Image (tube, rainbow, N blue to C red; front, side):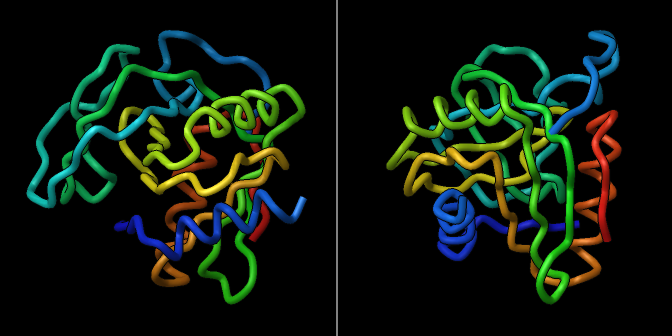
Length: 169
């Protein structure tokens, strides 16, 4: 599965913030029970990536989910857990909804990151790295995916990494 960072993705994320997870806490020993990390991108290169999943809070390198881009990332800014993951529109948009506390965290983190490239990491891999155009204060984040099949794969991966989150086709 390949998700692409693009101006379109940044616009979709900004749109989601203008229009307006995850369930129970998990086992700290289970990487998929960890919150999604948010980190500032310091650089990236399009080349095969073999870095191990970045699960510590320290700065480091991380691959995108396809293993085709290497990101150099700052220390973890914090984490959020989605409540629900939904495919919308033509099926190529994946919308993630966060609960009240995680929405506040997301708002605070994106307010501090306006004008910067912010990466979302799930299980130590970058699922998105877009420039933050406006704070995301609605608790909704939309990911534009190239194909409906890619969106379906993204939903499955996001729900698998978020125990307690619900998925709506």
